[in-house]
Length: 221
Length: 141
Image (cartoon, rainbow over all chains, first blue to last red; front, side, top):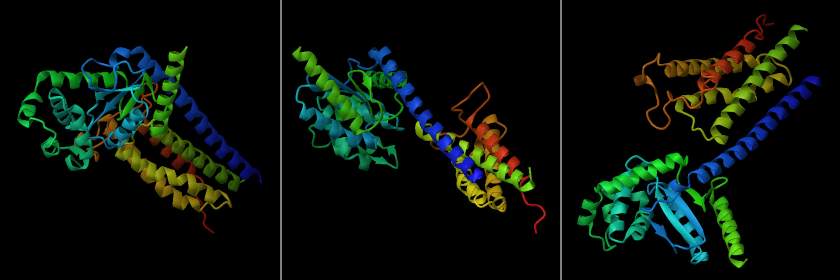
């Protein structure tokens, strides 16, 4: 039947165009975001950023993180696991991307906790309790305090510190860097300056493993 | 060309437009990751089913399928026109239905200076209606 053949050819043709378009778009896009990161190295790592791991580790993961983002909470232990599996070989640099409305206040709390040397415990406590202070996708800074008790923080001091202008400047700088690097979603990862080819745990693990392997080869030769 | 064949071709043409629009919307949303605004979702609701309903009327040919497809196309067209007026600023901001997420009045794509996603949608719904109306069986036996 001629009409049936016409219909099938049209349907298959449209699907093929869609699939090829998708492939072309993805490859163009990943090239351009790699170039963007390459051309804007200075925006990737700032002196003010909290880091974890040895300074001379061969692999540096830069993570743009929003403490109110549920996916960031899920990725955090996975990144820690990767670091634990490769001791002294991975350094984590955290950049703030408080995209949720009100998240910048929570970032200010974390930055103030950092002044007391408790950044990572505070971040881990807040991520673990995220459901209790992010209500209906809205972070409530008033609800974070009780989750910070027991970490040995001077909360009185912390409340004063979090209003410091340098903290506001640092958050503004991180947001500006996120804009330059076209980071619109969290978490976003860069491994030794390279963006993930596509989002997900497996692409991240692949890229980290590849970078670790090539660093090992470079070390041996 | 007999009357029947013309009608079949018109419905087939409407299906082509609906399929291109559906795949295009999926490309914008899933591949380019542009989040659809609320009005875009309503237009999708009326566009996507046409891709399935119209071929059911093509094989075997039953032009009564237009009775089921045309209301969808007309409602989708109305929403697309509303969306266009909203983007153009004819309808004031205050009555737009989206307050959170992506504002419907935001322009995410502009080709050649005037082609926006709501315009593509309005053109697609208009073309589908223009194809379906002449194929409608007027002399019901």
